[in-house]
Length: 399
Ligand code: ADP
Ligand code: MG
Image (tube, rainbow, N blue to C red):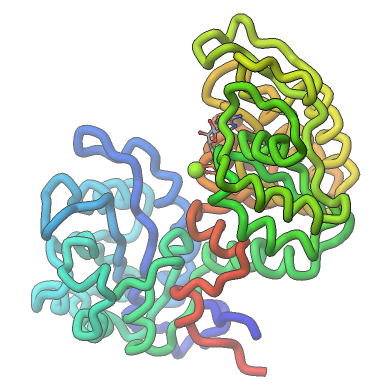
């Protein structure tokens, strides 16, 4: 059964109604200004769709990690002002959330107008998913729309609790897109279905590997994670980042994988990260004792690019190396380029994970993928096969 979205609502369910929309406006700020408005823009399709149906839009979001109540540093005021620059609709900011003033502002708003309420993390019961707060928030709208996929793995009052007290409770367009790609596309993938997994630690990705192994045709491993697998194979890993306590688990996964787990043939190694000038490729069984693997090697990069080119569904999570420091960004570049051209050839390509998404964006390739997930932690939990509480609380489509 599918989650209901704003597209399943009738005009009568929207016209003149107050749509309480949980968005993810947790944007980078500097000197009281928004420095990257990607997340604000990502919410515009949902906001516009609601406004065009004559709804009144009330926005809820968290920003940063304020400790112990309101803190002007984390006010959504500058975010509301930035939103006003992006939309012709009138934007009103209210510097509270669970107050009479906030409630009155939602009631006073006219169809086609937007009210932005103050940071939900200023509220005492937000992170505890306090029932009373959830009921108070529910008063702020006539329907609930969740478009904050990046927060859906947390059961907070504004992401989960409120959905039980305010119906209909449906997904926004951004949320719908995330569910379509991370959910539907991966549940019945066009084959071959190839996943590329990297990043620093195997420990954070074990459940993802376990969940993907039965459905993928191949799982290409990169990042420091590869070194823990090398160690499990009895190879010398030098000074590479290895999670010693996970070696038995890596062995177990290799046994279970029936050849689906593909490890890099070679490694780009160096004595240390700041000795990038002495980086050189070695076969995986020749990693020097006093050097570390910081990227997959050129042979592995070429082989992975080939596997990517031959796939019809691709999922990528975790960079292939320390992509923040050249030349250890080469493996990550190779995979990103191969995925971009696979997209052009008709493959479905999905990138999930904070650092992988950042890598793809910094390379200017985000638009070249079918979907780059906006939820780091949430996308990872989704790929582990977990139900996200913020999604589970929403209404299901009938039939
Ligand atoms: P994501 O956020 O996409 O899920 P992770 O957080 O799991 O990715 O991993 C990203 C980090 O992994 C990056 O900071 C990168 O520098 C690091 N990393 C990748 N390969 C290596 C390696 N061989 N040695 C050390 N760190 C690595
Ligand atoms: Mg990360």
